[in-house]
Image (cartoon, rainbow, N blue to C red; front, side, top):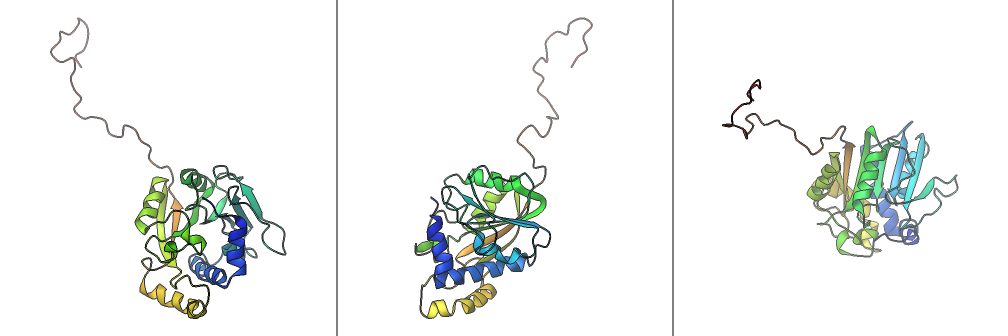
Length: 248
């Protein structure tokens, strides 16, 4: 079930912990995609806090927000680029997105298959998608004081298997949120230090979120008869052959 957009806005923009999450996750994203000059960048769920660095360089930035969550105007102090949409009907043409970021859009959905199908549809050939989900092994998934304590959780193997099922190819993976989800005190003040240490120690085991970059599988194989039987059964073998007919 999706969190309400007001809850998400208040966490990310009005709490010290939310601002620390922005820095940590956005920093990892920018290590993968340092720029998006001339590209179309699309976020789905509540990805707006991560997209701001691309506003000044990308050709277009779009923040899609599911109807079950609600929508807010974004970015503040600039023309609105956020759009309310149905989970299974994103208002974008196929192949629109050069970069696609999903944050709080997959794990909270009751219909994750349609979300994955739409993500595959709108991602351009040669584009990249970044799936950000709560880490099943991480501390953040165990506490509901943040948005990462709600909805589905994933191990790295599970999210990669889901990507494979919907014709994505996992390319690289990172993690973020190594400090405990503490709202104040030492842990919050030292959160940036914990991020630096965590990135050197573990790529995915200890982080609160998993971040998997994926490309789009082109011309995926579909179920069906792939190999002809080299020695077919002779179901008529032994029966008389009619005059003029050639044996099979």
